[in-house]
Length: 629
Image (cartoon, rainbow, N blue to C red; front, side, top):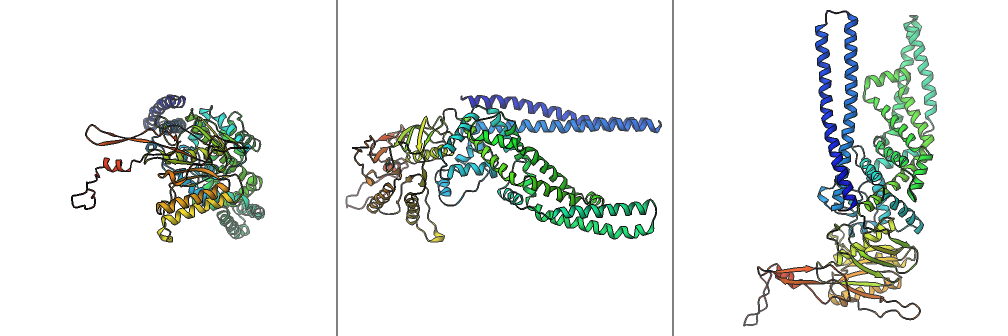
C-alpha cells in the first residue's frame, strides 16, 4: 500500500468518526432548541399572573437561550458539512489511486479548442468518463480544469516555464494537507462556476461605467429633500411640505428605479459568476495562507498576497449579498425611499470595479494556474513511483522512456516498457497481433509526453523528451453528413499532420499513428504509408506507427559516419501473444504486453475465430468452397 493510500485511509477513518460525532451533537442541539421553547411556554403559562417585568425577563432569557442554541446549531451544521466534504475528498482520492472509475465523482466536462487539441483529446482519452482529466479533476472546471486542458493540449511552452511548473509540483508532492484542502474547496457545494459566467465577469471588469457618480450626487440631493420635507410635514405639520413631499419622493424612487435598471444592465449578466466567487476566494485564501512554495506557484502566492486579492474579492461578495435585498420587495422599497439604496449599491460596485477590475482578471488567471499546479501535485502525491521528466530544447535523444506505462491503468496491471527515438526523422514501427498492446503503448507515450510538457509527473521510471508538438491519428471516423468516407477522413488527418510538420514553426512534430489508411487495399496502403512517412521524415518529424503488416515500412540501416547511432532511422518493435488449449477443449489467448525488438512474425486472427467457435470446415469432395459456421 502506497503512502498516499495509507494517509487517505487513516484520514478517512478519522473524518468519518468526526462526522458521526458532529451529527450526534447536532441532533441533541436540535432537541435542545425545542426544549427551550417548550420550557419557556410552560413557565410563562405558570407565571402568567406575575408582574409584567418578570414575564418580560423570562421571555428575554428564553429568547437569548434560543438564539444561542440556533447559533450553536448553525456552527455544528457547518462543522458536520466540513467533515462530510473531507470524507468525500478522501474517498475520491482512493478511487483515483485504485482506478475505480464508477466510484469517482461525476465527470464535469471542460471545453476544448477545435483543431489538433480536440483531436489529441479524443485520440488519447484526455477527456471523458475514463480519461486523464478525470484523474486531475480536483479543480474548478472553468478555472483550473480549463487551464489543465490548455497546458496538456497546446503546443509546449519554453523549457524554463516547464521547469518552473515542475518545481511547484515537486514541492506540492510533499504537502498532502494542502492538496486535500484544495480538493475540498473545488468540490464544495458552491464550487460550480460556469465558463460563460466567468467570461461575463471578466467582460464586466473590462468595461467600467463612468456615469454612476452623478447618480450618487443626485440621489443624495433628492434623499435630503425627501427627508426634510417629511420632517416638515410630520413634525411642524406644514401643509406646503406635504404638497412637495410626494412629487419629490416619486422623483427619488424613479431615480432609484433607473439605477436598478442600470444595475441590471451592467451587473445582471455577471451576478451568477459573483454568486460562485466564494469558492474561488477560499481557494485564493488557501494559497495565501500556505507556506511559500517553489517555482511558478511561489510567484502566484506572492502576487495574491501583495495585491490583497482575497480581501478585494470578499468585499465584492459582500456587495452581492446586499444586492439580494431586492428579493424582499417591502424592504427594498423602504431602503430606496429612505436612502436611494440601488443608487448607492451601483456606485459601490463601480468604485470596486474602478479600483480592482484590471487586477481581478489577472487574479483569476493566476488562480487557474495555481489550481492546475495543485492538480498535478495531487497526481504526483497519489502516484509515488511516477517521476518528474527531463524536458530539453534540443538535446538527444528526442524521446527516451524507461519503464513507461499507461497513466490510466492501475499500478498492479500496468506493464512497463522501454522505447526510444534517437533523433528527428526516426520512425518506430510497432507490430504484433490483436490485443497485444500496440495501441496501449501508443497512447501511453502520447499521454506521458503531454504530461511532461505540461509540467507534471509522468507514468515512467525515467522519461527524457525534447520539446515537440504531438500529433495523432488514432480514432478516425467517417462523416456521412459531409460525405467523407473513412479513408478520406484519415487522409485529411494525415494531411494536417504533414502541414504542421512542414510549417517550420515551433518544435518538431512527434506523430503517433495507429493503423493508418486501413480504408484501402494492402498494396496501396503500403505505398501511401511510405509516402506519408517520407514527407514527415524530411520535415524532421519523428514518431511511432502501429501496424499488423511489419513490411509496410522496411527497416533501414543504422546511422554511420559523423552521427552514428544504435537505433536505425526506421526501427521495429513488436508484441507477442500465445494461444493455448484450455482443459475444456477451448483456446485461450495470453499476452505479456512486453515490447521486443524486431518485427512481429505472429498473428492471432484465426485463433480468435476458433476461440469464439467460428470453425473452418474442410472442403468437400466435390471441391466446393469452404464454409464458415
